[in-house]
Length: 112
Length: 115
Image 1 (cartoon, rainbow over the protein chains, first blue to last red):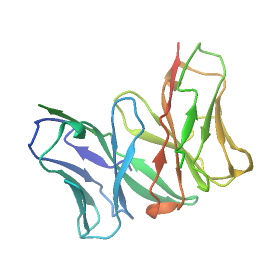
Image 2: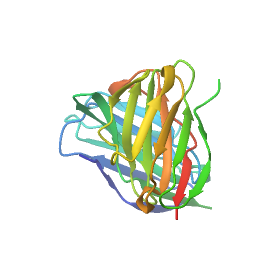
Image 3: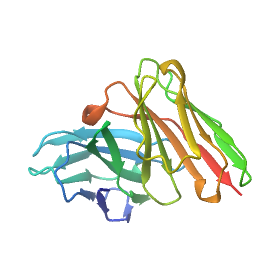
Image 4: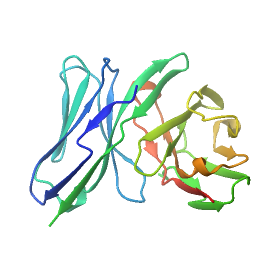
């Protein structure tokens, strides 16, 4: 089951904050966050494994709720370089092991 | 350390033709993944190799797609014959650890256009 990301797109002015949500109807093993700039490879931001976990990476942080069904990515004091599409990826177990299912992405555009 | 590389970066082919995409993972990464992103949509899982073995190929659209990983090193993804709906960006990713703990390193992608 594909995780649901919201919002689909957001436009910010430099210095503003944003929150991107990723939710699932079932508990997840983990959540990965990636950012892809136009025409480039998706770049790993962080992974959350435990319910209630919070992690930070410079001014970008993320949380994973206690039930492990929702994760949020927080972008604080956004910079022009934050522009891109943000994907959450969730792990689905199966007979072959785990595979990553990505959400549809949230397009973030930061303007000066 | 070299990252994940993919070749070619772009490919434009006609419907019915064959195309082979190549991925060289980061050295030492046993896990290799193929994904496809169609314009504006999610990054869709295609398959997962552990060394030379296919761990999970549940995302492969149909039997026109064939993936191989010779000797557990580089991987190829062949589309034969190509259809219009195969257009998109094909990403390869590799990781040292598999499963829910594995941070994946993506290649720059191959943009495939089928006309």
